[in-house]
Image (cartoon, rainbow over all chains, first blue to last red; front, side, top):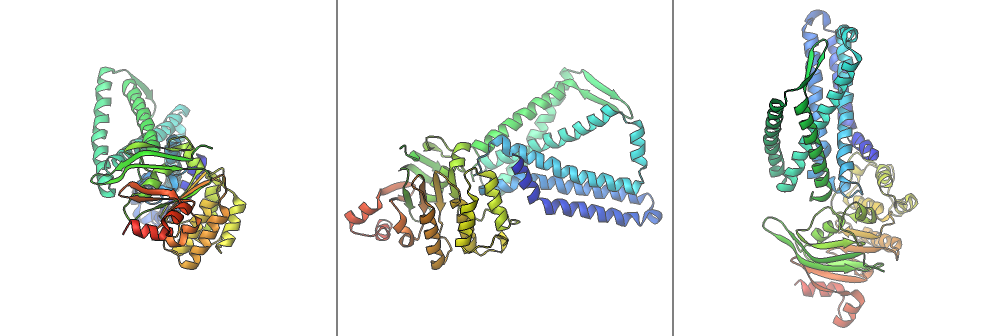
Length: 234
Length: 231
């Protein structure tokens, strides 16, 4: 499975480097404008970071989409790899490439900001909050991508055509996304128990909806893995 | 020995089209079988099902006694009729890719075949001509010690000289412990290597048998027989 991750990162190397270099060059340019543009500089740096993240997120969707609809699918789906390995490798590659861009964005923002926000965070943020933030960051990427990959695979299986399949996947994503939100909302009303973490800001976690989201994630992951291994037609 | 491929009443339907309509085909170990038919007859559909990248609507196919899946993909070496290698790869990267994923890949055979095909390991896949890409794909596929080789149009878009080279490579690297299923339109060029042939039309096998016996009983070459069946 790690081999699959290696080849995915190699395949996306130009995209990752392109985004990182653009963010670096953009931020270095902004650094030269610190005196004249003042508050505009950190705002533009944030835009650069968000733009980079959007691009690398779209690139993460193609980690699976390219194989479902392009000829390279013949390379991936003829490998003696299980559906779980195929899906996990896509998720790991996505987490790695998104993390690389995130790191570059944060480092460049710290340079622009001259470390003010970073120092403030280091002074006030507790260790457990840092761990929670990292786990939340990983959970967000993995759960959202698993959900999107599920919609892509179902769209591909149900609607064979490239254009129809992609549109179908988007509609499915929209409908299931709403369904997911409704389910977690209803569950959080039935089970209002929460866990609160108090620090710079209060973090509230509804226990019921957290469990429901975890169960939905496991179901989506297993279903997508099964479909990738047993149902996808090229 | 058990048959390496057993397809029984295999059907595959698309929205408005039936690609396979109850196809029955058996392949014995050590045989090179030609699956011959015109465009749209269901050849590629059958091959894709055997390779595990297409799923039948009904019927059953067993490869080495198992339904297509992770195990069968580890013993099937499939040459699709598409440009499926990554564009960023050099030839040596594609060899490494196969080595990384297939336990039966033989690097020494790959080096010999690259040499035989006159392919430079440092060339970019993207820069290769159609014929050279075909040779590279064949090199990768034949460098595996697979139980079943599935070759979809291995001579497609290749000039006559290269065709001979490719056929020689297939013959030289074929072992008695393996089987091979080949589709082609260029029957005349390739019929010399067939042990058995199956003619497929509209998703059904219409004629099947030992190549030599068919030549003798019908007093025709396989190419002539093909033209007679599909005229």
